[in-house]
Length: 181
Image (spheres, rainbow, N blue to C red):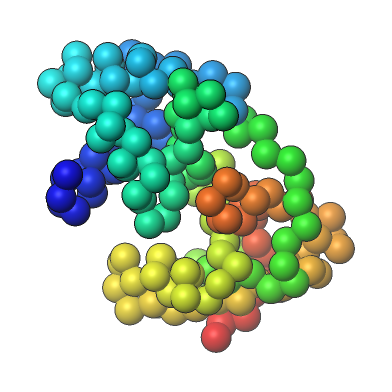
């Protein structure tokens, strides 16, 4: 499968494992998991033929590790980024002292007023590395990096989770914990 095919399939999986599972006749189980066979059958009903080998290539070859198989290889889920109701069953975790978020200039006025909000997703997504946050910010234009004082947030009682691909998640980041780099 070439890079363009991988990207198209990754976007298809993101749409249906994060936002619209019902369009493939899927229901996300606890932890966000769906049976691989149900996913493949649902995709086929929608005219999208995906082989098990292609699915494995997307899961293992995705640079952001957006998807994961369970330990048996019979279930799959998106690591984070859901807009549908789901409990990923991630345990609270202690984040690095500083986390990062990439954004664009147009979003700054709202961020300065309200902080980082989860919007239609379940959590705000943060990175442990500046370069990852920069890459995220570049998707919508010239990136602006924000540093988050995660240590102070945790001390104030905010809860953090780490997804299976190293993305840090929290419910919100109030403006007093943000600093523009």
